[in-house]
Image (cartoon, rainbow, N blue to C red; front, side, top):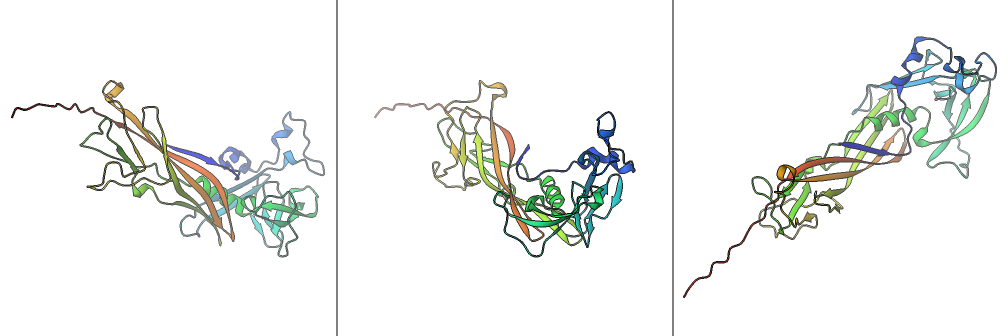
Length: 295
């Protein structure tokens, strides 16, 4: 199970606005919404922008970004005015940067804005954007993050099949190395490319008996001859599982991943996500028998 907990990036749901690609320029606000679109300056509700990133990945080339403004396909980038953004204006990163605003998000940069394309008549101005929401690269970042799919953890235990964990004997827990390594996804268009990376940082274990433990790494893989208590990532069951439904405890491993992105000369932190795997574990109780002898 993949559970995203990403922060700091707004994702564009292009499919939800596919109807705007038909060429109609009537805003939904015109239908009983009390907003008139044929006036100047044009209300924000009347500007419909769709930005879709397709293809690309891995190599950093071969992708394509397509843009629509009020139902008409337009170039996403204009060499004079810059990138189309979700408000219908175009923005171009300034070569010479003024000091950042006191309350502006970091990292970021100043962009020149031109809104004549949106019919707003707002003219030119200067706007500060956070790097993760930058015109042009923002959709690439969102696309790369949405495509990021780190694997569910492969759970290993010892004693493990065909042997069974034993009551009051430490059971080693670890994540197989094949699912404990960075995972990446790339979105690209033309010469611009952004790669999102998920790096595993910790594993939380729910043994199924009401307890839990968190390990800083994947845990130590069992090697024959290791002392039973030598792994810091282990759990000792205090009762057998025979009386439980299915005769097993449900052992759950949840891996937390740090998510970052980098590309187009920028980088940033996108928060964390988790992946989860649940496996049944049968725990047995071994009875000892002390037989006295005679001399």
